[in-house]
Every structure is written in C-alpha cells, then in structure tokens.
Image (cartoon, rainbow, N blue to C red; front, side, top):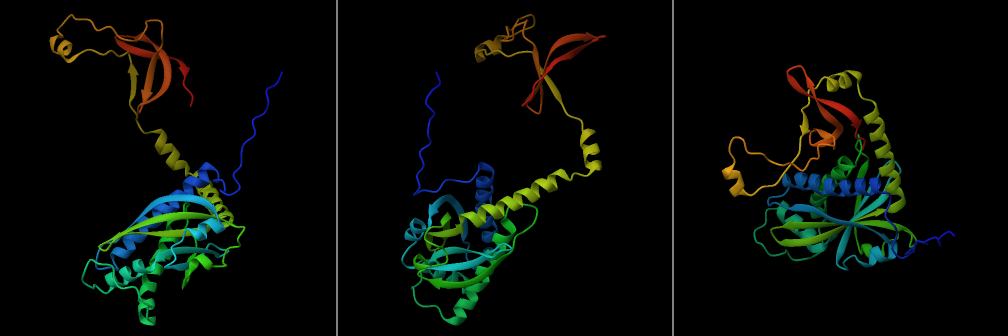
Length: 290
C-alpha cells in the first residue's frame, strides 16, 4: 500500500525564493554593491558613511511599495541590456545628509528636510552615478553589467513602473553616517533579475571550463601533504604531565578498522599500514568519494 503523497502548501502572497545558486548570487550582488558604494562615496564625502547589506526578500509589488517610507525619494536605474527599471529608495533626511557631507557642513544632527535646488540635485547625481557604477561592477559573473542612473523622483510608493501583479526582490541597506542610522530599499523586478543573474552565472561557468592546459599541468605538479591518522584518545592534563618513556596510550582506532589518510584536512583514502623496506607505508584499499 502506497502512502498518501504530501502536498506542498503555497503562499501566493509571499513569492518563493529562486534556486539556491541564484539566491546566493543575488545576495552577493547586494553585499558587493554596498561595499563598492561605500568605497566610492569615501572619496566624495567629507565624513565616513557606510552601507551594509542586511536582508533580501521576495515580495509582491503591492506589499513592497507599502513598506516604503512616506517621506522618501527614489533613484531610478536602468540595468542590463534590456534596461529593466530598478529603484533605490532613500528617506529625504538621508539624501540631505549626503549633501551635507559633500558640502562638509558642521554638526551631527540631521539637516533640515526641504526641496533640493537644481544645483544640489546635480551635486547628488555624482553619488548616484557612483552607486550605478557599483551595481554594474558588483554583478556576479566575469563581466560587469550595464547600469545607468535615470532620474530621482518622490512618492515612490505610488510608482507605476511595476505592474501591481509583478513580484519584486526587496534588498534592505543599512546606512550609517555621522547623523545616525537609516535604511534604504533596493527594488528589483523578480523575473528580469533572475534572468540577468542566470546569464551571468552561465557565463561564469563557461569561463571556469576554459582553463588553460598549462595551469592544469602546473596544478598537477604542486606538492601536497598527506597525513595518515593512526588514532586518537583523550587524557587529562594531569595524565599528560605524568607521561614518561614506556607508557602506552590506548587509541580509539580498532586494529581491524582501516586507517584514514587526509589531504588539507579532508578524508581522501582508507588503507592499511605496510612495511616498505626500512620505512612504514600506507596501502590504499578504498577511495573516499564526496
């Protein structure tokens, strides 16, 4: 009699994560973008500001837009060959903080929130373009992807860039400056992002396969240490201090069980001790596969 098949419960309000390889690639893209942006901004700002990748989650469009702060502004980027839209949403106070650091204004209190002048928007565009370059260079894979800063606009929670039925990836970014901590949100359309990362991973795998034969030959000539473990035991420190010539340690290894040989801490072969002339040897009786 066969058992009843188990059905997987699907939550249609919360989109599922992509496959593990692509999910890890997306997380690496998130983290690397924050690191590269922090480095680029260090040359533009008078005070240190750090960006830290916190979490990424798949959300439906409506839920993602509802979680954005009311008093926020969005930076729109066009990513990849298809130039799909991506948003990074900052609070207004964080953008004013960036501007204050560019102008080297004194104080540790958040600057007053007001409307930016055209000159101030032009100054901020330098930091936005640096973020676009970071997104481009941070993509997993052998080559950078295209990323272009498009514009800044307010009320991103009302945007119509994404259809209400679309799923998004929402990556949170913790920003720490002299004024305090704040959170930015990076919105990426799910389908286009998974496709882009998939292309990059495929290219990366193809590059890995194209290993020069000279490198293979060189790797095969590298010497490695092989360690054969006879056995182990545990004794107290008081016993250690009393050990002397002629004492015997009883190991956990049975005389009927094969010994294990390691390379760089990984078990590779099982075998038995043999004599090779005046020296001890190790005869392989089984190869340990992953």
